[in-house]
Length: 118
Image 1: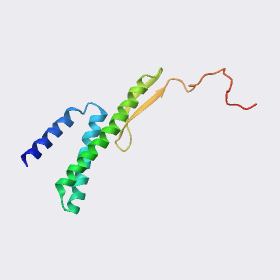
Image 2: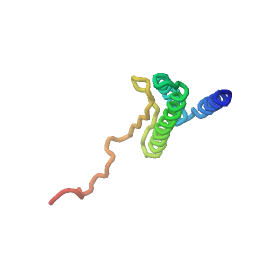
Image 3: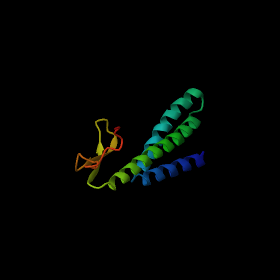
Image 4: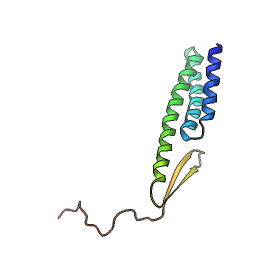
């Protein structure tokens, strides 16, 4: 049981330290939410600890994947010319990336339409 407590503390410390990115935050939120839901399901199935462990692992992995995708989108948006990138929170309290362009026209002008049929 001491090994389980040690591993739990180590994972918690690692998650807290890595929260400077959306991937770290997603991992932490996913692990907590997954452990709670897994514990509830595990209790109904007869083994709370196993359910919480599996739920935490699945939640952490899923949260990390979603967070990594959000980090990647934000990084790609920063590379676009004349774009303003900002982190916003919606009415549900969820974080998102907002990209605003200086111009509403983002396509080449004075070009022939290559898809037009003659």
